[in-house]
Amino acid sequence: MNDWKRGLKKGIPIALGYLSVSFTFGVKAAHGGLPVWVAVLISLTNVTSAGQLAGLELMLTGGTYVEIALSTFIINMRYMLMSLSLTQKIKRGTKKRSQAVFGFAITDEIFAVEATEPGEITASFMYGLISIPIFGWVLGTFLGAAASHIMPASLGNAMELGLYAMFIAIIIPPSKKDRSVFFVVVMAAAVSALLYYVPLFSFISGGFRVILATVLVSVVAAAFMPVRREEDHGGSHISDPFSAAGVVPETD
Image (tube, rainbow, N blue to C red):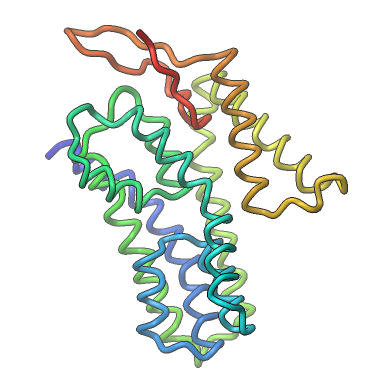
């Protein structure tokens, strides 16, 4: 129960950030002609900002099912890497059903929180961590879609800035405490900027840029600053929350 409450507490800031971003999605969906319940259903079954916005854009411009499926798959492919990393931190013996739920609910911000948690993560903590953010994401979508007739789309777009501020607030504290985490953050930002601004890489989509940056930084981090595991009363725990890089190497 304590782990669940701790997860709930850490999920509150994420939920508050999601309210503004999903509000924007709700406004755009309603302005595009989608019913409120459809916008809410999309958020409930996706829980992804970039993927939903890209899919919505294709839906409103007459994109085919294949285009929508491929675009959202590529953009959201990074969550596969995050889920793989989560399996290295989740407590052994956690039911597969629960692991599937956590994989579905993983987002950039939720992953950032769980990656910087010391030691193994319990199912109770993860259920607490994901519950309020998902609720906030769906609630924000509903409020945005319902209020779309009185709010201009430009105001909704401005609310997206809240997500960036929230993500910075998540990564700064662990970066100040651990130099390895700081290195990962700086390197990830540098690689992402390189892939985005250098014309040579302009043919790479946004989703693949995230994947390439994640894989490159993870490999470098795992090679030069691997996670340290210590035996503690018959069990192992992670003493360095470096899994923010996305890779937690196995130890014998």
